[in-house]
Length: 281
Ligand SMILES: Nc1nc2c(ncn2[C@@H]2O[C@H](COP(=O)(O)OP(=O)(O)O)[C@@H](O)[C@H]2O)c(=O)[nH]1
Ligand SMILES: [Mg+2]
Image (cartoon, rainbow, N blue to C red):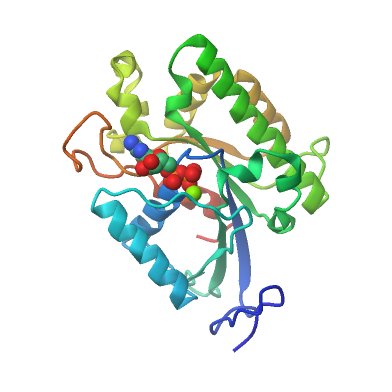
């Protein structure tokens, strides 16, 4: 068995032997990063090339969170600003070798100050990004919305600083890693009367439109028309591969007493898309 050179934690078989891929989740406090990740992993168990956990302690932690989510309870807010990566082994497709996947899910505080950004050392390895935007930050009074939009933009700028600081990349040269932009908590969105006239592709329960360019275009248009046009422009200027998604990790309506009114929707697609861009799936 090998040992992590940083924390001296013992690694299970396989680490350090296979090719690895590192994916970072990005988003402010409570945008739904951890819920998203947990739901995506749970969905992946039943999909092709389902991954296996490398670390049994981590596996138990994730399973505990699955239990909480399934019973309709909230998972604890992430406190670690520099979290240990969630490690998974992805079985090979056909002749290839298995790959190791590292998923980084920091507390939202990580993007609230430049000092904390400078601690996100895993950015030196990052191969792909999942950037979450809470659907609720696109609604509300104009003043509140301006503040929320500003927060999203600041998170984005700090992510660029992390790439520059740790990976030595420069936005002038452009970034090659794929970015999945995910509007989270779509169930809340459809709660709002004002969204009922929106294109169907934006609704969490339109599975026939899954993973199509059409959905990406519609989510992009929606972000642009709700104060995030500069973010969209910046993303597409700086990154070569950007795709927009809308998902619901919990899939229930906040105003409903019924905890399981809807199932989780579309959580796996953004992660799968990023991995496909890196030829991992
Ligand atoms: N309605 C709804 N609430 C969500 C969803 N995802 C997360 N939440 C809630 O948003 C809050 C923050 O979620 P969490 O995953 O801890 O966010 P994080 O801080 O970005 O990791 C919690 O109260 C979650 O229950 C979703 O898809 N729908
Ligand atoms: Mg969290």
